[in-house]
Image (cartoon, rainbow, N blue to C red; front, side, top):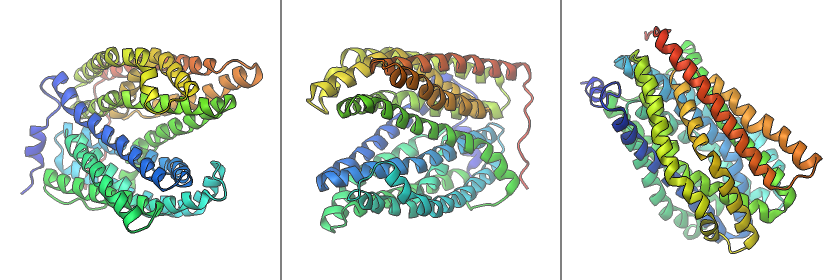
Length: 457
């Protein structure tokens, strides 16, 4: 007997308190991201116990692995946007169909990542600066992850579908359990079985595969049937119009980070270390806002499908208010506690000064980051992912590369100008994004009729 209708009625985000829905969904999502961050740090810690070369190899492998992470983020966001709309329409059979199509796409993308990765990954490792004695170590990790990348993209699909149904707790549970299992599996495979870096990669693939199986089991209980891969090109085109821009948006963030590090590196390795630590701390402080991103996408997606444009706009505005409250809490931490936080990672005064300087300057842009997150989530939820992608290209790649080249390389400005440029670009981008999002949501309110998605057959 199908339970889809009963479950969606219990997780209906188209009625009730918007604040309650935002908090109920965003808190578990943020907690899951915290455990995911700790998971990644655990891999680095065990690699460091092996050797400095192992740590360097896993770090470089992580840069390659981020490409798969970007694809997974796109699969999750695209699945959430499509499925949430159908949930809002109470089209439960179509929910199952869309999830099946997403599973089919995930399998094909996984195959492309695996075969394409084996063709270019070794060259990419060398390009990223791996020395001759480090490159083979990085390849050990990457080769295992490439074979097991199916588990990453499938987990992303299942998590995205559950989020569309109003369930962020299951993904949190999977990520939390994965973190604790990783603490046990890493030393077992790496040291007890003597697999080294290969053990770290195997642990990750095994845990992600188990997590994907768990999420699909939960999804089976929600939908009343197991998901089965489907291969229908018209549906795929609809899904890929959501997946590709979301993946590319994540990719621009990764590439933008490489560009910034390259400019900071002109001032010395200690400054790179300080910036890297400061950036990681900022990312941790932004996790509640990223949880809010997930909640806004799911809630707006359902209300968009239910053809409630006024409520869509209200979700966006109330999301910004919660984001402002988050900023009021975390901005003082960045301003007043940054030296103390940086000192947990290093006692080098130059590293501490650089990291603290970055955090204090970028605190100005904290709420701007929140606005960007909520704007992107809202536009993706109403099937308009292209603007965030183009804005991301300009914000992460084109403008920083051009401006910083002129300031740093041509005219020799100090490093602090790099951090000021980041703030200016983020604030301006947030203003533009907010203006565009409000314009589009108000347009929906005036013209509420939506173009229907494909009809299941």
